[in-house]
Image (cartoon, rainbow, N blue to C red; front, side):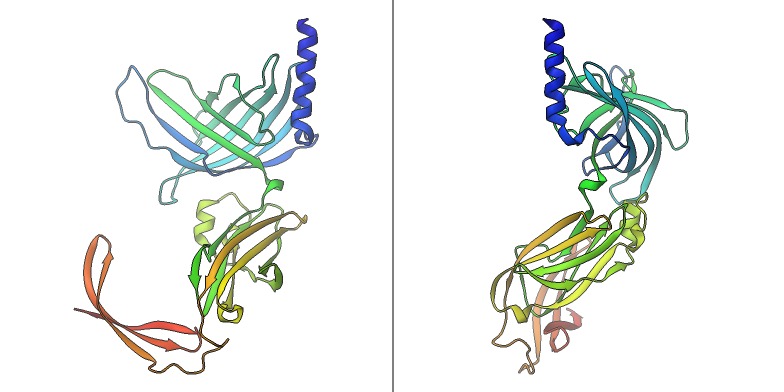
Length: 321
């Protein structure tokens, strides 16, 4: 009976994993929510560091199957722990193993042997715990499991072919827009970005220029190729759309044809024409504005003037009261 149950569960596991059971090495990237933390545990009393975000990549290599588990190796681990400001705190390298399967219920286990900042390897283990149904996504926590001083990591990872990684920074969605404004963000993929298209209300408008300098993205994704030149941006006159609700979609293509859609609904506020030739009066003085910055509040008069280039008002003077 035990043999029959084991074989039955193995079949169920194979059906659950489906096409995720890759026969070739697969390039993985850590997803948002991956963290690194170290510090004291009982019975000792000493500080515990805050959880730090971790980015980076590894290679998931098939390592065969037994009657209960499908086994993998983690090779070429290259991870970076970041402080809340995006500064690098640790460089993590090493290798590990991952297995998923079980006899009576689906379980998984991750074991890591990692070097932190080039120091001697640390052995982290999740133990065999319930989970793994989300594979080929990996979501599991590991620790050194030692008294007093310990290291914890939450590992969340996905195949890079399930991405690209991309963010639409403007518009942010559900915002009111008018005049001429930039549409911009950034996109990354280890296979390279082929093109980025702009759709408005489902209609293809054209390609958005790609390759803008983004040192902030490079800092957050130091292991991603070409991260420093990952920006995309273009200018769009929202007045041409007419007033009301509209949909903005940016479609990112990598060089293997895989895509990611970034969408942002907007509400356009506009005058009676596509282009304002004259605004009268063209200047306004906004009096007694309360402005809070860097924790302090001060009052200003702000002078604005209509800009034909922007199709909107811009600040031309700030007067401290």
